[in-house]
Image (cartoon, rainbow, N blue to C red; front, top):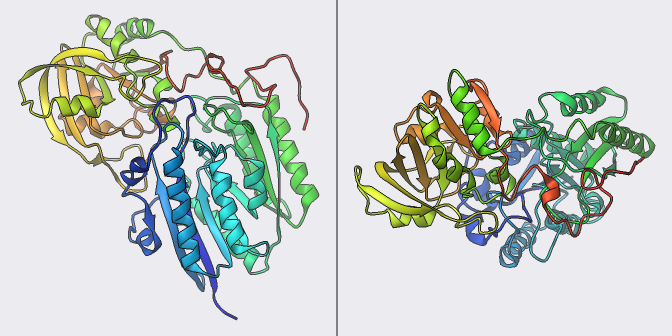
Length: 500
């Protein structure tokens, strides 16, 4: 009997349809080493993503691993048609070169949307399915913020999703997917999958899935793994800032040849999600002026002020200037340093000849986000001119460092504004350390994040204040015009009930 040949692939991007910054080929090429094909995917032994999990499990089996494509880009707006065609072409060409494959482990994010293909994840999974045929096994590993669609379901033998948020089980999810695939190919199990969509969307809770209603749900379905004939269940709370027809939370169950049990579990989990729909909605936020006033009254430091509406990890442009504008207007009320960061390649380029000690004026922000803000004019003294990479404290990528491009730090009275040539993912204390600032000793640290601050700042923050800012990822979902989402859906619609 010939050795089993298993293809592996990963496509990572979260597409925010309310973002004004499109996602282009160049965004994929400059993220985490660029698009990798074939054997180049296996060259980095420090990977921390699903590919690492695939390789860990498959490498211990007597199978041939066939690396196909690994591509990713920072979350942003819709993937352009040109970029989508490029990624599709790369996958098709690698599959053609691979020839016979018995199975494929594929890890699309689950919330990828392109200009002319709303469900780009399903499109790529279908290409994988078409290659292995109806008798092949395709196991899909998803981010738990996937919008699980009917096409994804039909093209996959089984789907599994992260069980943590913030995500600390990315590689283990890949490993689970690979074990599931091997058990199916070796005849140990016959995976059967069912899912149930819930007419509900919500932003990630403050603690992610670490406390409250989501933790209760995640603990519940994870424990179901111990039940007879259960292979695994997943809950995808979806990605709220994508205006697509199949939007909504999705419960997924995979069993060993027991479709009735799979549907029962999916329905049970969906029903439980619906029952806590009000508990998972975000708490009210406060205005930036109120946050600054509150920060001035708090003993201790640092006080963290978050701007979830401009979270890069959720596809917002990251350079919204609204928070900075208000911070500058109220900076005199703060006794101590105030830290802020904006990715702004044009501003950095305009200051390319600046030297430490120079006093410069430049327009910052509002270059990528042209929908929710305008550039702000600032004048400050250059404190530092340097360049990345920096350590990836956030753990967002597949490598231990993050590319930032050129870095410039400006002193504007008690504000330290750090400008980077590139957009970076997640709150990174190392960015401030790179310019000689100890971020945990500042009085106020402003962060473009919803829940990501918890990885580096939660343990040291004197208090965390959630600021209500405009942007592509506002937690007030009723501010957006959803044109394609199936209605009714909570919280956009309130007066309806639902049963699986």
